[in-house]
Image 1 (cartoon, one colour):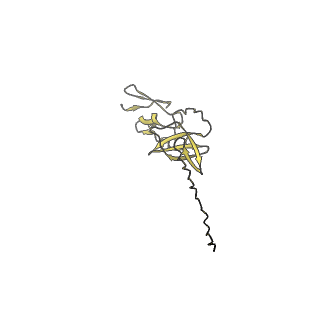
Image 2: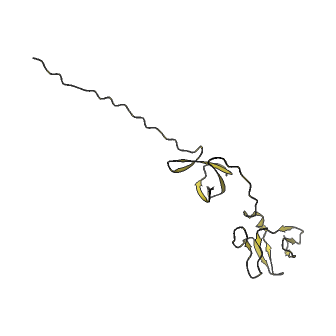
Length: 152
């Protein structure tokens, strides 16, 4: 990519090669000596850089991979089904109401939703619940032995 040329308004950045990089709609552009903030996360946007030529902010090429920018897909959840937010280091981060839990991923891929079953206060994935082995009680036969009295 060539050197970026800045044009007002800053919704698009035009490059010399004719490529167009669109700015994120959640990015609130601050002053040149300030910061650009994300209106969704309320943090500094890591996908913006300063243009030293025009003294404005420009998006970097990886702005397209911003997870906050991606539209959320609606998932229909049934009873005991929960949405998987993402996977990191072999762990699934699962949204349960107002909080997120972390569980080891037993699947070969990353599912969009999982079914969790609670057994003895522990949450398990459906199909990965440990089998409870019933203890077989052995019948104990007690023979009553009585001493025979010798009759004389």
